[in-house]
Length: 120
Image 1 (cartoon, rainbow, N blue to C red):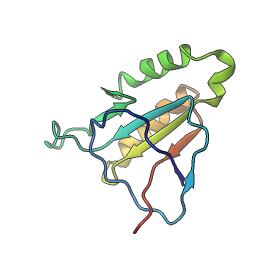
Image 2: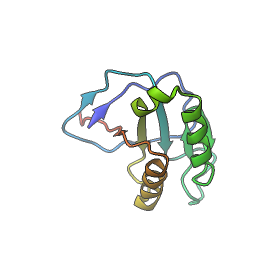
Image 3: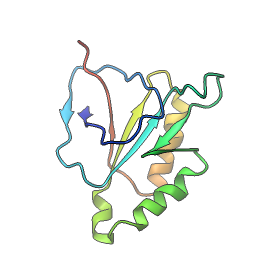
Image 4: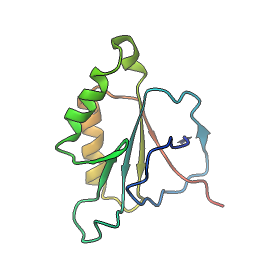
């Protein structure tokens, strides 16, 4: 598992990360895309979990266009260096995780790190 420090993106989603025994820090912090899936004060009704893409909310349907836009704003030679950091609540349905992973593959965003917490 790799560990990254979240940049100054307002936390719109509450997340309880899964635990892991091994953590590794991410050294390069440029060209990062943060996707956070979890609980939100606005969404406790059992609907699909809220998804935060960088500093705003998104949906699975809107995510491909937003990721494509991010890639288009990046220099072509830098696009292969884009890293996606997933912070996913440990109770998020695997179907949602798989949908996000499928979208990332379709957008050719293949370097994906999962955030986790080291048990105390």
